[in-house]
Image (cartoon, rainbow, N blue to C red; front, side, top):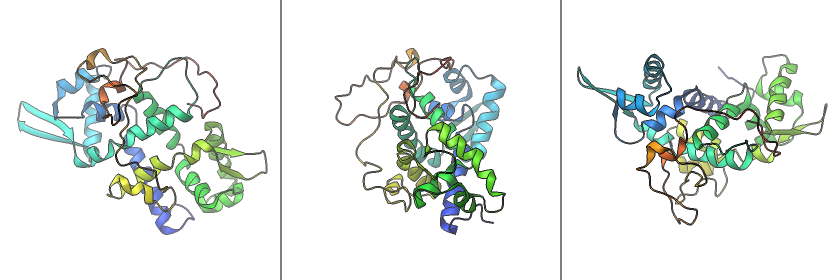
Length: 283
């Protein structure tokens, strides 16, 4: 059954990406996936890396990630059980640095530098707003569109005025622009620059290499997914004291590797009480 009034291939693409986002966006999922990077770990080893989670919460989250096909539980003996990434999860991890790069450039600046994991969570939250993916797809494919036209494309089975709450949210988030009531809507610069992320999620959810993001029919760009360049967390951030094994990186490094240890700067996540306005999308 079609979810939108967009072409069937586009509708299926949006559905796959929305499902992928639903796997990784729930609270703590991205942190657990990053904690599992490397060799499979025993439950107590994972618990030490995400110490703010209660045992019951961690157990539930690991079960959900196993059900989603992102984590594999291996029972070596009745007393030796490990958890590790599936191949699908390992293929997904390179998308997360793209979100950090986008967030650092486009989201408003907080009172304190945020660890990369919080940048990831903030970016994922914006992308999982109700109807956000379909509206972003429609605006990218069609350019400027009225609210009524967008409603016909994105929610053809609903009253067309129902499109306005999600549109207003996207405008408030800084991903969509409009010149006022009754005026057409268009992607903002920040919304348009989501292309590499959405293209990569589309490729991953379709079982294709992430390099296919550059050839996505809607979001593709010739340089959307540079093959040789990997993201490195902002060297200005305070490093995680528990991640002293992670090598120090500098901006001068020609081809840095992504070190997940730099994603956590505090054992217990904390957010600023207010963000400083900087003209970018809100967190």
